Image 1: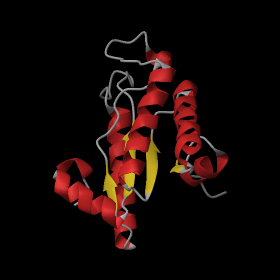
Image 2: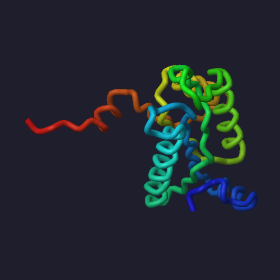
Image 3: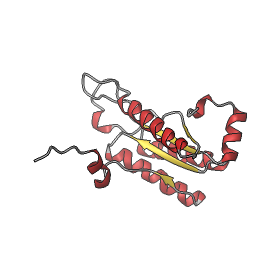
Length: 160
């Protein structure tokens, strides 16, 4: 089972004792053109999280996928119906509080699987990670897909 939210509280306590990796899918509820659902980023982040958990579990590293965060800073698409935005400070505080709560219960590591690339949203994640590190001394894994290493991995080139 890779879904944290399907555990009982006893199952969660046992998982924390084993030192789980908790993967937090982060997306947004916003317009993605007339052809895609408002939850596009959430759907992508959940699938990324499931795949990461499966790979970790195959390597005997117990990983569970947390319930997704579906709200973030979405100022770029705020003019489109259905877009729901929260303040950068709110987003950072929410991610911070989730991470601190999980670490206080015994999580081995927390990883963020994000697919919403708005700069202020990314800033809120980095702000939260910095605050978690300052408060707990613990790191949060966050592969920022905007960085060149990740962009190159996603780029397909045609043979010359």
